Length: 243
Image 1 (spheres, rainbow, N blue to C red):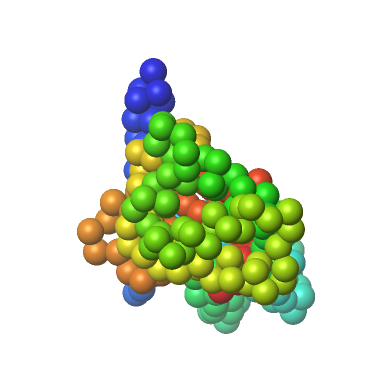
Image 2 (cartoon, rainbow, N blue to C red; image 1 turned 45 degrees about the vertical axis):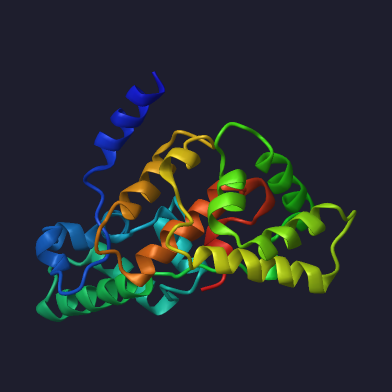
């Protein structure tokens, strides 16, 4: 049954696209005058279509996310809103619209890394990772312990798990170890991560992982998102991570 669910979700997500160079956005999304007047819907469609991860646009309400994160300023919004009431959209309007949209798309890609503030409960995370590593059933923690971490790195995590609280220095060290894991190509294993959940989020990561010609950004995205999904209870949302 689990295999059937995975295959169904995979089929639903095969069409997902990522940000690409030299793509004519206007032609690809057939942006006409009507689409420009309905700019919020158009921007949302393009942003979702051109994003490699849903976290690039906050996973919901792309326009609000762009404004909140200063990727779309008030002057730009004022111009875009003005298109709604224009009886005729000029060539200059089209050029300005295209310029704003292209700038927004270029600002989407992010390369995530942990910062100390992204931990909700670092001590709890260390304890959870170590306790999970003892389970016989495959899971991210025993995979990390056996396939990703060096003996010294895992020994440090085990020591962290024995403490009732971590100092600021220890939190920083823990964070640096996890960021080292993110850089390693062997960090993500789809069969292991399906222990966490069977969902479009895991399949999204697995689709990137399966690419044979992954970019540095794609490799980072696979591992950062995988780390977050494995221990989401202990981290702030991925969109709040450093980049």
